[in-house]
Image 1 (tube, rainbow, N blue to C red):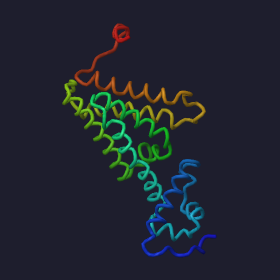
Image 2 (cartoon, rainbow, N blue to C red):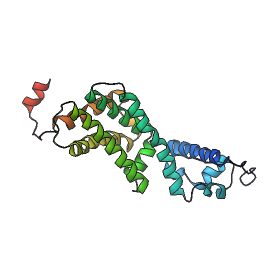
Image 3 (cartoon, rainbow, N blue to C red):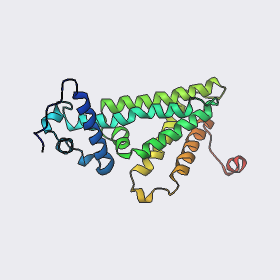
Image 4 (tube, rainbow, N blue to C red):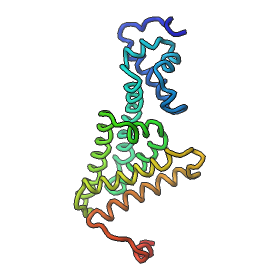
Length: 214
């Protein structure tokens, strides 16, 4: 029952906060943001709603804390897959793979942070992702890849990876490609090739260009 929970021992408040965030994440993953309410989280945690409000001032704050907690792992994942790769273009590709795969694993959190109501936390996270990819492109420039503007190239790249995620997470899983890993890698390859090949100048593709690339 809620309201009968023994008060957490001194210094244990952080453990309850983590538990509340775990429950919030489970609700987001399984039922979406509509199911994530203060009362639902309190009930699952065995506490009263006021106990939740001690840690989160509103549902909105709880939702974004749960989202950003998951998002904090993204940069670690991207860095882990690219850290030991000497070729900066390949490293950029692997970070794009990690980004798209992350979005498809966490569709609710991705929608709320990257495509939902704008908040300061969302803006900060979007900016951090953009700067991360721009730094990876700068490493390609240092290695000799011709790029007129790292900022503009990062915008094109981000459009590619964000579009690859958004195309699927706004649809039912039943219509997702059966080979999701193949989709992720092809989308990442398309984003990197498209961004870098047009980084020094934009051109209109033709049938001849496609046949030569094959």
